[in-house]
Structures are given as structure tokens and as C-alpha cells.
Image (cartoon, rainbow, N blue to C red):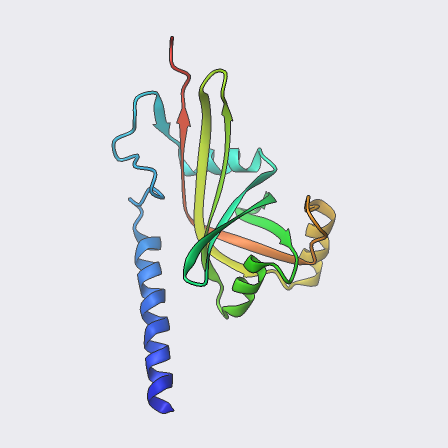
Length: 173
């Protein structure tokens, strides 16, 4: 039994260290391939990316479910640098976050594109998600954020460590 606990702790520590290595690599661009930006695109600063993220009401949260990537559309707000979502206690993302003592690594993506002008932007924030338990904060977010589907009874906060984004500039035809 003791050997099983040691193995479990070792696996958890290794997974956390691996996630931490990615989180500390400030050159990581969220998989956008912006080391060499494509024509008609430009990398966004972290401040501009967060401003744009705050300018839209919805996005997609990406998390691991049964060892596979899962993506769920949700509405959000940005508050004091955190991405706040409300969900049901029984949803997959809520269950995954609740099952981890110190939170889980997630990605959050939002974008806004105009198909007519072929211009827009995309932002990906990667960080730790955890449940908000403070009654005052929960009450405040319940007043400010209303889920589009069902009724949210759980507030989750994503603390972004890596925020990347790009702007696609309309091409001259």
C-alpha cells in the first residue's frame, strides 16, 4: 500500500512539473506558430490580448477529461486579470476542477472574426482553474455573469499564466 502511495505522488509530481515547465516557458505561443507570423497577421501583446478577451462575452474552455481533450463553449467575464465562468456543479469541467486539490491546467480561447473583411483576432489563455469559494465573490459573480444554458451554481476562475494572441489584418484584394 505504501508503495502505491509513493508511485501516485511521483506521478502527480511529474505531471505538475511537466505542466510547470510549459507554464514557465515565456516563449511558448499557445501553439499559434507565431515565431514566424504569417502574412497579414501580427502577434498581440499580453495586455492587448486580455483587453480583447474582455471585450467578448463567450469563448471555449479546454480541459482534460478521461485523458482526452474536451472543449466546452461558455460565457465569461474578465475580472482583475482572471477569467471567470459560471457552470453547474455536475458539468464535466466543474467535476474535473473539483477533483484536483490545487486546480487544473486549462486553456481558454476566444476570438472575433469578420468573414467579409477576413480580419479578426484570436486569444488563448493558459493557466490554472479553480473553484471560487469566497461567498462575497460568488455572490458578485452571480450578479454579473449569467450562463446562457442552464443555471450556473458554481463559479470557476482561471488564473492565466500564458496569454497569447494574434490579429489577422484584412488583406488588400
